[in-house]
Image (cartoon, rainbow over all chains, first blue to last red; front, top):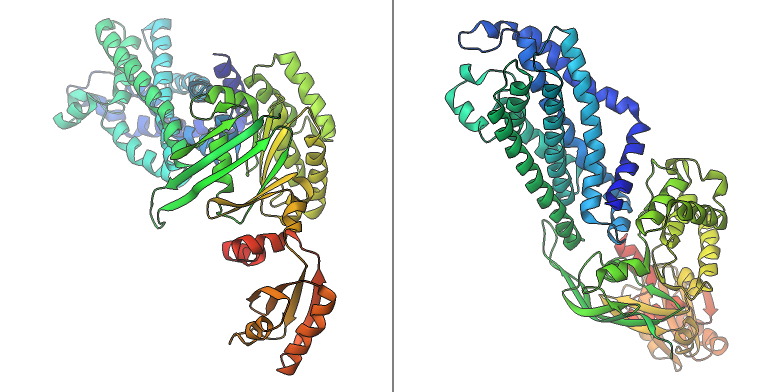
Length: 254
Length: 327
């Protein structure tokens, strides 16, 4: 626990020294939100599309997408540590491996919270309104943190296994596109092809988007929120545990 | 009787074949021990197995077979105790470039369980000792190479380890920074019975810093002893002749082999090295023999045995030629 706190402190300090980076990572979701919001405004008129305002439908999806996209970069900090001798020094110290992983992910999660709030602010400015109240927002933030943490720990694991920025980013780009589009992030599943809906059922990003959208709606289906939330928590725990094991694989290779 | 701070017995480590690289036997039965309070220099060319040895002793890597103990703790069975007893200064700089010197030291101290106030005190103590106090509050990325390296050593010492591992501490430093770091490391050895394992491919560095030397070649220790003892084992003087052109047909080698009191002749390109009983009497004979066959010579030097000669003797290659291969 102490180690987790210490490592979290290290990364938070680094982030806080580069506020421009957080600001920079906001440009992308802002563009997604405003561009898609304009481009696809008409989709709500397709028969069967549930929401009446596309921007309101899109915003929770973009929150999850932002969390996913940023988590991919998580591993680059591990690679920077490996390229220097920082990772080796840490691993030769009694620091807990879980703490090394968790500390970095927690600091990432704080960025996710800030970004989620800002994406909502942009969405609000563009006209998105929700009836769900504070609980809905809290669940959305929590789900976004889980998405960021789960895929951040996967990114860290890939970093430990490949030890290359290029490989890490390549793999992540390859994975993040289907995760984004085979989901209800941009389009209501009711108007999407059947196979997309089948794929989305196994997509953790979609679980997060569904849970958030439900929780933000006027009459949430709490059982759906709970079910998808549980899937997400379980997924995060499993990949978190697997990623911590990746330290061993890394140590075997050096 | 002094106990051994470090003990490695018959370490074997093989790296599996990967893309574009064959299976590599990095350690091939490496054995050595270091008594408490001693600075041991592991000397060898790149790829000899020095860093692999350090990684196994610091619990980073695992040997395929063999045993290793650090202050009595087995590196496989008692990782936690080993990690608490050692300081590790990796080959590459091990500080966080975005944090300041103080922040780096305090974080490291706290990881080893120091309270915040103790860690802060220890950090300022170490900064003072390594003459980094003035830059302690600046981010490490603004430090010079020499300053970063001193901070690395300080990071290895935060928790007062019993054994310090220095993996090629001065590689890449300019001569001035190197000399400065040598002074700092030289001062460490007298400290509180600290045992130091230093790997290096600089002969002068080993000669200067190490109490004991182990020469490593192809994953094995090929010679051990104090620098003086190793040098004393070599009788006589070493003669170094620079020829105008390389000895392509082996003529020079044959000529010298015929001379009495001349041995261990090695010709590499246009440099000839040989061991002689008496430098003063051998040089005229060597030059005479070469002149008879009209072999032109640029320079001749006679010297007392150096570590380079020790290395040559045990590995059959001169240190410089090996370095050339590696580079």
